[in-house]
Image (cartoon, rainbow, N blue to C red; front, top):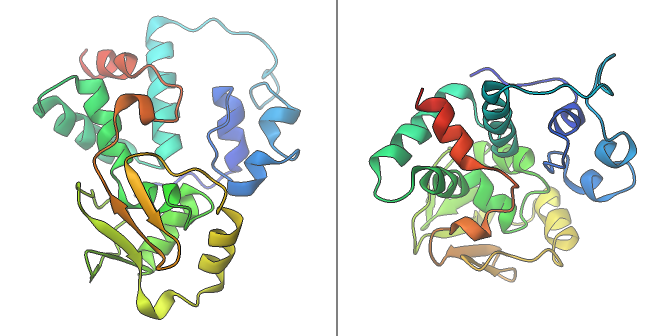
Amino acid sequence: MARYKDEQCRICRREGQKLFLKGSRCYSDKCSVSRRNYAPGQHGQKKAKLSEYGTQLREKQKTKSFYGVGERQFRKYFEMASNKKGITGENLLQILESRLDNVVYKLGYGSSRAQARQLVNHGHFDVNGKKVDIASYLVKAGDVVSVRENKKDSAIIKVNVEANSARPVPAWLERDVENLSGKVIRLASRDEVDLAVEEHLIVELYSK
């Protein structure tokens, strides 16, 4: 799968908001959005008026970058959301929130979604007692996500737990720091998604 390998902070500057792609750096004075709140490149400071299509495309690209998902998988999630009962845009965000790498990040065991994805891929986590090393695995209500027994002494996990202990956990998750685990109480609702996105624009883009 194609993966963006350039400077992550350029993505946040392009979208004009923090997407928290670099972990603790995003909360510090080193954050590029705080220092240079304009698009990267020679003409970044010029205000360009977007067309209707351009506005819809930017919302899609922003959401993909936020969750670290490629185009093919994002379209697959959209089709899943379309086939579910309810509002397609809200279903899409709920599916994205249910990704295992996102859950690991929200529980505080990864400093960013990118690091959480790497930890999952390297086999650091169990789901309901079974090893899962697929970052796109979709959790369900009642699932228990835990650090594998042989990974509990990992320096990265220990640093993240200490650094993120004060980070609030969303109400749809329950964190057990002592046992390095967490439980999915229910799936996320729309108002619990911490991304400023107009999902209806994504629906309009894919519906053309």
